[in-house]
Length: 432
Ligand code: UGA
Image (cartoon, rainbow, N blue to C red; front, side, top):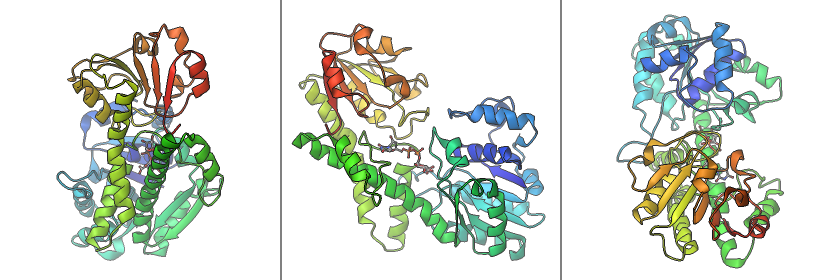
């Protein structure tokens, strides 16, 4: 099939590359000329394991093209995926849909034959109806169908998540287009992916409800971890103990820092705003947002306790600063709250991240990037394990010539407390 992906951000690029790998002819369009030039040279704008190899392979095969020419790319394609950003509005917590609507206007000017137009971006329920209204201003109803096909890709695992999805959700108000989409995904369905066909609004809401539920699960276990710390219980036992109940499930029950990234913080706020618009109070999700926003402060308080209320001049090492492992994404990472706070209090911070230096910390006083784990740990009073990269999982701190009184605050519970203690260091974890 001939596909056009509008927007080469995370969703558009990963989906476009994977669709081309399934044998479709894909054009990925972006208005950013530099980005397109780079992609044509095989330079990928994001860190995503496996993406570069797959891009080069399909670009060479000519199944994948990159272009800034939106009009022609739409004209040449049968299925148009809208993959532009839906960030949180400035001065508001709702989703900013301006890019979605401006792209819809562009599409309406280039419809030369029947097109299926799909929102892959996360869009609030009823956005598809609005897109349809925009298209109807220029195009007859029988010339297009607007469908919702949300993505469930995790950063760092996106290619795997695309090829082996738990489910594929198509929200279509006409049967013909739903069948075409089922056909597009048939290579994945034949490998076992579940296919769910709903109406358009339901698919839009499935995406938000999924992210909000996962954010709730994480926040739930984070709060239980707070209780565990007060009662001498290891939260890891609780995660296993409740996760084995199939009705609960074991995934997304890892206690840690506040959830971050480009999706959960944005989508929880957006669903609450949408519900408010429909005079429905999503009080559970509202309290999840609040609890998560207070979490970094809580962990900073713990850092203060570990350092016996003497943060000034203490040498603190951060291992990992991105919001999770296998990504270079800093959006809404809890380190963005912790590091500036600790620097303001006079701590001397070194950080190491496998994805390199982060411009977000450039201007902060006494915050510097280290080129290696060893250099960042050297002379530290406290190591904060912030992100669960594999690189950090089997560090032998003893071999790194650390200071004698080194303390380790393991915010992802990846170390065995007993092992760290047996090496002579003080160990602090989350909920243990
Ligand atoms: C999330 C969803 O998991 C994807 O299904 C969805 O497609 C995507 O958002 C999106 O809407 O585009 P992502 O933001 O890449 O994916 O990251 P997650 O792996 O979900 O992690 C989000 C945050 O939760 C991270 O800060 C992570 O550290 C935290 N987390 C996750 C926990 O603290 N504990 C867990 O058990 C799991």
